[in-house]
Image (cartoon, rainbow, N blue to C red; front, top):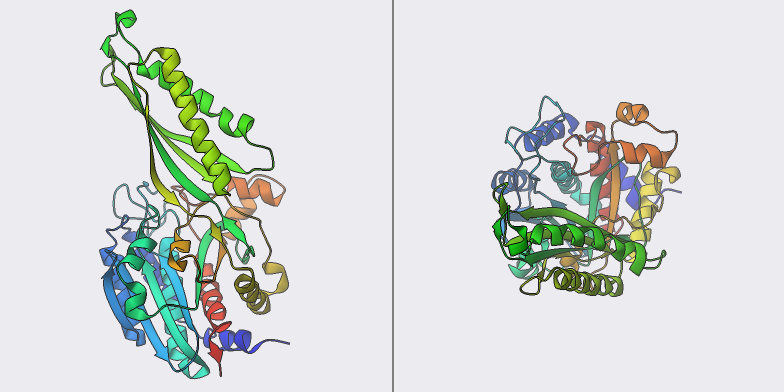
Length: 413
């Protein structure tokens, strides 16, 4: 038996203007904008919302967009899409590839905005079928972990009302037609760490008169690999990545300092704190062993919280997605090591559901090496790859996931 939410969602998305949405997507993809510079993207989304009848505001938290459609008594449901691109040079070869050198929508946020615009239009056009309030949010700066918190701090909820439930989704690699849900932890926390190793610079011909921070940094990078492999239990999922190491200016100059940039992915605060303590201990130890003139500087940078779905909320969304797309399309993938700032919109208490939509083109998936799902999953272009190119056939389903998710909580007539 199909629920009223599923039936209504199928009705409202039966005649989606797919060619127009595809054109909208291609335009966004051609013109990517980095975090907190999403002025054009925000304007395009705001235009779509105004045309659909939403009360719309721009510039929230910098470049954020919000649109509200009040449609009688009922719950307030927030639908969110992030808008920013990445500092990546596109290598897809697509006819609608980025026209901005060194900037690309390599994470699918252009697709997210397209899905959101389509869902907003469909729900507005079919407002006689539901009651409640729909709050649509185009969020800046997800990639830097700033955007959601900035929008909240800038009075998003004071201006538009506090929602009863939050819904969000993300493009992911995998054969098209799958909608992974996890009732609980679905995305990990992320913490950036910067280390400065202080040495004593000098001429490359006289290393004995220096304290070489490059050598110390090299030992430190190697030793840091033991934090996960030797200080955490096998059941404690975590990742430590050294993403950048910088030192020196010339071949024959031993510099006075070296800089190391780390990223941690953790699934509990206790593991995160243990890893940070180990990093500080190892950094001090290596610098002491090398005779550095002072202790290293260890500072924390951008961070993302864990994304933990409310069980009841996510179960309800997953159920309607099974009805709309078929039972086999929804499954629990377990928590991913990727991170999101979406939970900042929840203020610690608003229930939310966050899920994935697989977007790898069928021919790319079939040609990928490997015989099993995990092998192919590892081989196809993933988010943040210069080759990441979602299949445009996912535009209509991605709109349908948001519409059906919203109708699972709005009062369906």
